[in-house]
Every structure is written in structure tokens, then in C-alpha cells.
Length: 439
Ligand SMILES: [Zn+2]
Ligand SMILES: [Zn+2]
Image (tube, rainbow, N blue to C red):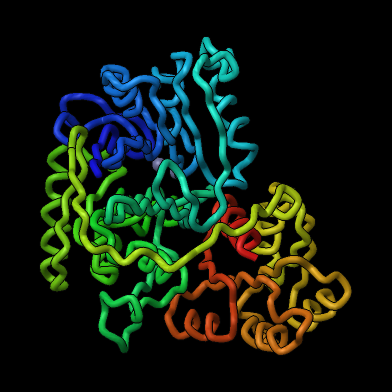
């Protein structure tokens, strides 16, 4: 299959003399299978030139599948300028994560209301179908497309496309689940040494891929001040690609403040880091026009992962959630985040109060602070997991301590997810929705 980059920038288009080499258009990558099926990974401003290139090809009508990671601007702003949508007979299927603020069609038509754009979505002459995807494997366009939630302050999917004896994995926008990536007492850069279950799942998703396209918006020095914004460093991408035995890694979603000189230096540092950790993965930074052929590479196809059933609006938006924290400010923030999302939220300020509330209310999900006086979060978790009624209750642990001993203890006791403070409102909302769709 063939992969080509049309947009490599994150956040906002950044044209100009300082971004000529790596490009100024926002996220868009095309993937064409040997049988000629077209996949379009995100529809940032790069999609305009891709649309023109497809229109210039002799094969008509154009049949293509757009796989949207999420609907932040830098991933959809090229959609109204994608000219194949303006030609009757063309057939475009738009896929994206379920659980965004509205249906996929509503969100995309929102940016095409007359206030913003002269032609509304419903007036486009091409045949456009919308398909909201849950996690798991889907058969699309003759390929096996596996979707998995990423860590971003919006419902965001990563995609693994398995076709033609190869696997290509697209992972934008995403940030580490835990700042502590590796267990201190195990060798780093092996999947089994990863501290957080979320990061381990992320590495497994890349397993044996011929090509991984990964968010690497920040340097390790920049990341601490950008935590919770939903983007990765090159060290994280290289480390996990090494653990997953990836052949080639392309770093993308470049920060708008990074000019060509900066990104070239970032590329040099990423390659040096790969060498330093003894990783054979070939690393480069994406640029507009980068064209790769991914040859069959004896890929291990990911274990059978059937699609999870659609969670449905009621589960994603109207669940009963109990927030347990002794800090009233955290309770207020979590309640605001989850109420805004449509959930019915109640609060408890300590462990014993929480256990009584769980018996009385039977919540659908628990947000549970780790460090509480008298009965701590781990103790509450242990009690709940020992009771049949709450053995499978989704529980998101909250902690101020991003340390591996607590994270390990939390997952060993059966935590569903583990979120480090400080967190942002959209981040908590997205993590809770991902937990609800999985259960
Ligand atoms: Zn983005
Ligand atoms: Zn985003």
C-alpha cells in the first residue's frame, strides 16, 4: 500500500517561509491499497490538495473512506474544501468516533452552516455516508480497520489498517497516560515494563506495524507545561515504537511554533534517542509530499478484536456517576465536567460515605480519589472488587501522585483507569466516556 502526507501540522495551519520544508497544512494522510481503495486519515487543510489530486486521476467515480481521529478543527477544516464532495456520483464514507458532542454528521455540518461557509453539508452533490465507530475491528474498503481510543481531551480514535500483508497505524492526537512510562525495576523499552495499562494498550496497538504515524508535537522540555493538552513527545513515540517492534516511525502533528530548523533538530534528537535506547526503528519527521510504500512485512495481525457494541447516547451522556474525593475543589471540578456532559453526578467526601452511597444508588461508574483519610481509595477499591454487585463496576482512580507503585497497585486491585491530577474538564469527560463505552 502507499501512504502520502498532505498535512503535517497540528492545531492550526502555519504557512510561510519558515515552514516550507515540513509543511504548514493541518493533519491529512492518504493511504491507497494495492486494490485501489482510498483511505483518508483526517481531513485538516491538507485535504484540499489531496482532493485535487484525486480529481485529476482518471478513475471515476471517486470512492473513498475518511477516517477522522476526532473533530477538532485541525482534523476537519479541509472537509468543506475536499472537491470530490462536490461531484455527483462520488461516494465518500466518513467514519469517526462515537460519543462526540453530537453525531458525526451534526458536528461536520456545524462548521458548514451559512455563518461559516457558503454551502451546507446537505447541499453537497456526492453521496456521503456517516459511520460512527466503536473500538475494535471493522471491515472497511477491503481492509481490516481496528479502532482504539487515544488519550486526548476529546473522544479520539487511533486507527490500525491491516491490508496487503502490512499494518499502518495512525495515532494523532494522543498524550501519555502516565508521565512515568517504565517500571523502575524492569528494563525499559519493553511492553511488559510499561507502568500504565493505557500506555501498554497503546504499545500493543502498534505491535509489529510496518509504519506508525504518531503525534510528537512537543520536545521533552516543552511537555511539562503542555500536560493535559493531549499531545506526545518524540521520546514517548520512539520508546513505545521500540517496545512494539515497529519498523518505521513517522512523527507528525508538528507544533505551529516550530519552524523548519526546529523540526529538523527534533528529528535529529529523535533519531539519536532511538540509537541511545538500541532501537532499530527508522524515524523521521513527516513533511508534505512524503510518499511511502509499505511493503508486506509478515505482520502479526492483531488478535481478533470484534467491535464493541455501540454504547448509545444514554450510556455516554446520561450515566449515574459517583465522585468520591475529600477535596471539595476536585469534587466540584469533576461534577462540573461530568454534569456538563449530561451525566447525573452525586458526591461523597470519604470512603465509608461512598460505600453507603453505592449500596443506595448503584451508580454506573465511580470516580475515586486514591488518597483519602481513614479509608483510602485502594481500600475502597478492594472492598468493591470483593463484592459481586460491584466486581465489574467501572472505577476511575484519581491521584495527585504519578508514581509507579500506586499505579501498579491500583491496576492490580482492578482499577478500570487511572487519571493523574491536575486534569482538565474535557480530559476527564473523555476518559469517563471511553470507560463507559468499554463496559
Ligand atoms: Zn490535532
Ligand atoms: Zn485534538
